[in-house]
Length: 498
Image (cartoon, rainbow, N blue to C red):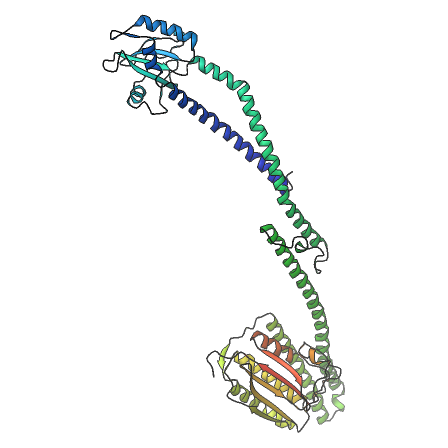
């Protein structure tokens, strides 16, 4: 079976050479035959007129038929390759030098004779062969007894029966054998040269195939030990380009597999964290409801109210976690896409601060907006940006102590509008700061909110980072020198200006 490219190329080359050889032989045979006929007619163009003059066939203006018979006998002996015919003005054969038993025509066409007489330099002109009903051959002709008073034509077939027999014998003998050997040797030499060239070309493809097989059989998460660049550092043609492209593809595949492994590990960790975070409020809510059911008759109305309030608070907390999970999943899957538009970021900040005013007043936290309100227009999704500001200001209120202060600063960084939410809480531990935007990341020494949820960054910051990434913006978290944490967001500026 033809399993390799080299074998298929070799077979294709063999068939191509065979076809070329046959075509070359066919063309050579017919072109050589026509060439020989043209040369023969050129050499013997004046043969008929020379025969009339040399053999004195015309005597006193008349054709000497006795001399003509002697001419027939002479040329049948000394030059059997030509045949001589005497024609009348209609082309009817009057006499001839050929074997009478082989004459098939009584008359030949005058059209080729008239064409050759009108233009002796015209080649190739073929006339009727009296020995065949359909064959034509080269000839020489002259009017007799003269051009001025012709009574007929001396018609000389230059390649007669004897010539055909000799040519057939030559083709069937040494000439054919020599031609066949020459063609065979040529094909063999070209075939060997072609196979060597194909081996040189397919050798690199074999190398590339081996590299691909080694990569497939090995650990695809690791870059292959041998690469195309390590063996052929220069890119010279399409095969080298294909090898370099495979190197790049293998590197990307290894990197993507490694990322998939990291994502899978993160997914497992996230599932475990989600299970814990959902189980905690669910267990608390279930515990309070079961306690209320068992002790309902022994609890006074105020205790019953407290049990129901705690259960309701845990239910809301559970509902909020589920909503955040769905929101983060939709953002990761790009189901929620931003619809950017230019808007004044300063006005949005004031609206969000006013919305969180009652919550801040309840805890005794003061919210103030500082900085330059004339910052450039932001080009982002208004609702998504409001969602981020809600999260940052809400977290600031939750993690700030009572009777503290939160400052929301407006500014500009590298031409981009910027908003920073700065609280006066405990800040973020330095070792936890790089992980603060990871979903469900738990800080051992992180700040705690008033609900008692310690060491939990939740999903809000992960959602905020994903929203900013989708909008082409950025979000940063730092600790302030005078205490507390600072969260800054930057958005693309509108091309329309301020």
